[in-house]
Length: 631
Image (cartoon, rainbow, N blue to C red; front, side):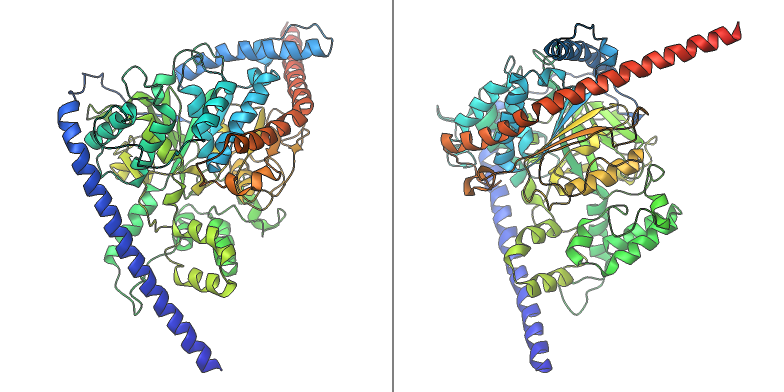
C-alpha cells in the first residue's frame, strides 16, 4: 500500500508540473498575442493623434517623515474642519444643546472602504449616500479606498459638482450594461468609439516604459465604463484634475486611492531564479523563501526574538503562514510572552512585504517597507515621469486615472499564494497540501499575470533608506494583496485620526485576516490595537484603544456588509453585469447597516469632541497655574 501511495504521489506531482508548464505556455502566448495586437492597432493612432507634450515645470521628490503632511493637504484640512465643526453643531442642536464648536476640537473622522469588486463599489456608494443623507459625511475628513471601493470614489470625485447619490445612480446605470467587455471598444475611430478610453489607451502606449499588459487593458475598459463622460481639462481624466469644484471647497472628504508595491521582492526573486541551479524537479528551484529573507533582515536589525518567532511559525499551516507575512502578524504568541515586547511601536523598522502607495488629488506618496516613519512624496501630476535622485528626468504626462483604476482593482495579478487561498476551499485537502508544498518557495513571489510598471519616484534617491531606490520602475497592484481594508494611510501619525469607520464589503467577513493584520499594523505604528481580530457584525468601540483621554486611541466603528444580498451569486467580486434590482438589493443592505449605526456614530463623535475640548481646557489651566507659579 505504501508503495502504491508513493507511486500515486509521484505521478500526481509529475502531472501537476506538466499542467503548470502547459498553462504557462498558453498564458505566455496569449499575453504576447494580446500585446502585439494592441500595439499594432494603437500605433497608427499614436502616430497621428499625439501632439508633443507641453513644457512642464521640473518636479522634485520629497522625503519627509510620516508625521508630516504636505502643505496643500494641511490647508485643505483647515477648510474641512470648519465644515466638520458645523456638522457637529447640528448634532448638538439635535440634543437641544446650543454650544459653539471650535474647528480645532472637531474630531478627525476617517472612512476606510474595503475592496470586493463590483459589490464593494455598489455598497460603498450606497453607504456614502446614507452617511451624506443623515449629515454624518459632513463630519468626515478622510475617505480611503481599496480595489472596488476606488471605483465608487471615481464615480463621485471625477465629476465636478457630483454628490454621493449621483454616483450611486451612475453606478446603477453603468452596471446594467456589459461593463468589462472589449467588444464595445473597437480599436478604430468610429462614432461609437469611446473617445476618452481610446485617448487613454494611446497615451499609455506612448508613455509606458514597459509593454502594455492586461492591467492596462482593464483600465481602458474601466475608463469607458466610468470616465467617458468626464474627460477632464486635458481630455484624459487624471487624479490631479479632482483638485477642483467640491474638493477645493472641502465639501467632500479627502480621497485617498490605495495600491501596494513589492518591487524589491519581485526583483530579488527574479535574480535568484536566474542564478539558481536546476533541481531534479524542473519547477522547484533552490531559492530562498520569504521566511528566510525576513529572518535575515530581522537578524540584521538585531530583532532576534522576532527571528525566533518566525522560526516557530515554520511548522504551521503552509497557506496560513505564507499569508501572515508580517513578523508580528501571528496570534500564536501570547501577548505576555517575551516576544511581544518587540511587536509594538518600537518595531517601526521590521520589514513589510508590501509598501502602501497612496494617491490624492495633491500628492502621490509611498511609505518605506523598512521604516514606517519615512516616506517619499511627489505631486500627483508628476506621477508618470522618470526620476533620478529626487529630480524629474522626463516630461511625460501624469498616468491616466483610468489606468490607475485598473491598477487599484487588479486582483487578478495576485501571486500564487493568494490564488491558492481562493481556490483551496474547492480542492480536496490533500491536493491543497501537496500544491502548497510543491510551490512553497514560489507562493509569495510568482505572479502568473504581471503587475503594472511605472517610473519609480524614489529611484536613486539618496535621502531615502529603502531597497526600493535601486529599481527604476515600480510594480503596483491591488492593495488587497496585503489588506483589503486601507488601515495604512489612515493610521499615519500625521493625519491624527480620532475615529475610524470601516466599511467592509470584502469576502469571508468574520474569517478573513484583514482585521488581524490591521491590528498588527496599528500595534507596530502606535502600540495599540483597533478591534477584535475576528468580528462578523457591527462593532462600535468605547474608548478601549489607548485608554480614555490620553490622546493616543482611535475609536472604531466596524460596519460589515452582512446579509443575503451580499452573498448572492451576482454580488461576487468578478461579476460586472447586474440588473438595477440587484444593485438596489445590495445598496439597500449597505445603507441599512449605516442607518442602524447612526445614533452610535453620532454619540461617538460628540464624545470625542467633548474629550478634546476638555483636554484643551485642562492644558490651559495647567499653563495658567504654571504662569502663576513663576510669578
